[in-house]
Length: 189
Image (cartoon, rainbow, N blue to C red):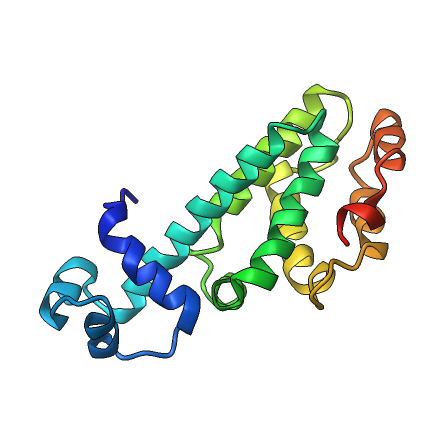
């Protein structure tokens, strides 16, 4: 979906600070537009929320890409992805909770941008001989995201004990050596 960032940004900021429990009138009043304009742009509250989640994912993926510029390999990039999810949970909790909700409830809206980001990292890891897949990497991306959202990020800090368990099926011997060199406890402090 293509967004006019200037139009969705004020709504995004409002939801970022206050959450998803508003009427359309409250949203319109908060961003100083009419309720009719809000409905003309987004059709329904549900559609507005999906647009906001998509926009949030776009911003998150942009942040992840910027962080990944400093990574040396796909394993480090995957750690940066997890670090950013931790950042989202702690600093953008309303969006994090809503994304979890959508992930469980609606098979058409399963955080496609995060899945695409994971697929890119996994494909990079295959090319670098750090990851291998016995099944479809897309299926593993959904599995990985589910576990990241519901197990690793159960608390405010990532449960690092599960990271090696999650990665064990896909790490090659080279991948295991690279992963072993990363101090994950330090990364997720």
